[in-house]
Image (tube, rainbow, N blue to C red):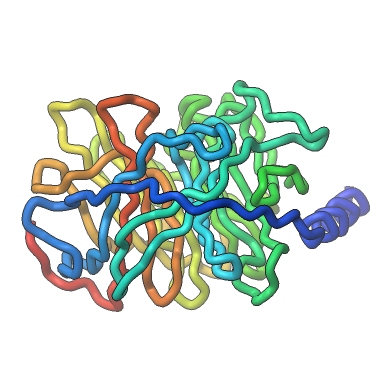
Length: 341
C-alpha cells in the first residue's frame, strides 16, 4: 500500500506540472450592475467586510457552453483569470474588470466541459462538480495551473487543467468514499481547500447522517479530520471554503428553507490547529447577509481569494429563471467593524 501511495504521489506531481494549452478568446461583457443592498453601496463597511461591488452575470453561451449553475470559483493570478465551475461539469474563464478597487463588470472568455482521462465529456450522472481550488496559480509561471475539484453524488476529488482536461485523481479516505455516510448524495463533497504542507482538505455540505449536531467533518487525505460547527440557522450548510496562508480558513455558509424564511449567507473564519483529532474548531463570525434585512442576494456557493484581503463570491441560479447568478467583490477587514443591519 505504501508503494502504491508513493507511485500515485509521483504520478500526480508529474501530471500536474505538464503544461495546458493556452487558448485565446475574444472578451465579451457578460454582466450588468447589481444593487446588493437597498441602503449600503460599494465602499460601505458592513460588519467584518467592505463591499466592493456586485454584478449579475447574464445566462450566455461561451463556446457553446451555457453559463449557469455556478457552484465554485478559483482565481488565477498568473493568468489574470477567474475560473467559474458549474455543477454540471462545466468550467468558464472570466475576466473581472476592477476599477479603483471596485468590481465594475465581467468579461466572458471561454467555456469548457470537464473531460475524463479518455478525453470524453464527463457524463451528467458523474458531473455534479461543487468545490474548486487552484494550484500553482500564483507562482509567476503561466500555463501550469491545476484545479482540484470535488464532486457530489459519486464523491470524488480530481485534478483538471483549466481547459477541462483531466490531469489526475486523489484517493479518498474510506469514510468519504461511501456515499451512504452522507445525509444525502447531493450533500457530499461540497467544498475543498488546499493547505501547503497538508494538501487538500474537503468536507460535505452537512454532517454525516448519524452525526447531526456534531459538526461537519473536514478531512485531509490521510483520513484525519476536524469538526466544523455550523451556525444555528435552519438548514445551515457548508458550501465553500478557502485557505490563505497566515490568515486561516474563510468559510461560506448558506441557509435557505422556503420563501417564507430568510435566505442567509454567512462568512465565518477559523484557524486550523496542527493536530486533527476530531475536535470542534473555534469559529469567528465575519458577516451575515440576510434577505429580510435589505440584502438582494441569492444562493451563494462559490468563494475565492483575489489577493490583498479581497475576495469574490458567486451564486448558483440552479438554472431557474427566477434566480440570478451574482458575482460579489468584497474586502475582508482585519477586525470586524459595526455596520448597518
